[in-house]
Image (cartoon, rainbow, N blue to C red; front, side, top):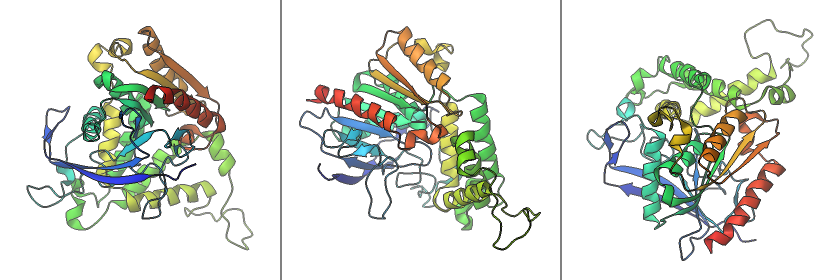
Length: 377
């Protein structure tokens, strides 16, 4: 088994990106990380699309000692085997991990864009990703793959560039957000925007961060990523009693339960590394994604011109992107007689299952990619 071959890029694009809103944005930079070697025919490229708080750093350990967010999936001998595939990870426009975003200086003013950064959509990201493909000379991806919001990007690739993708792998995702999901996003955004340190998105000028709002937003999100069973197994009703305490409860609003401690820890950690404006942008892109809208809400019509083969995966305890939402995607593909494989995996970990180790899930992905290897030769 070979070692992971990786390379980091900061790609500069001087031509303005036409956005779905009608605006244009540029110049801009996209941070990109690649794994493996692009073959002579440039036919073995796989695009990995990230979800809300991830980045271009998909696999391996970077110079900062951080392990890639999907390191258990991508690498030599792993399900997406970089001994055979050239994997591309892109930090999406508007994010806060190296690509141009609200924290970046506006060339016109020299100060961070802040609230002036444009609203983005999944389709805007996909268009910008196509320019990255052009940079590497990739005319057609062997596969575009992602979980959650990443899965939405894979769907958009199949619709926007049907001739440029061989396989779309959509994991723990949906063709649009439910009203409940939009509501969760709105509560999280409201927590951020209500923070006195938010300053209408221009908090950089005040040298503050709306940490309280970010903490609450992360806690809300994190609850929705886990299943009830998973939370019960991890935390139950275990109390965090001080050593030597005689009573069961302290009768206060301090951190009493282990689950409270866990959520506060996750919130604190998130607030230290993620940008508040980026959170607003990405959750709104989630809300707006709805490929059927332009087809009178008929998803089958929206998928009519797809050419890619699809693998769609859901998890039984994922209540935020429930299996029935994946089955809607499958039905729309089958209505058009597209080739699609579907797996619903019984896993206890809720939405986060797509990031975790599960032997059946990983074996399925590995088998799928092994079959793809022949197409790339």
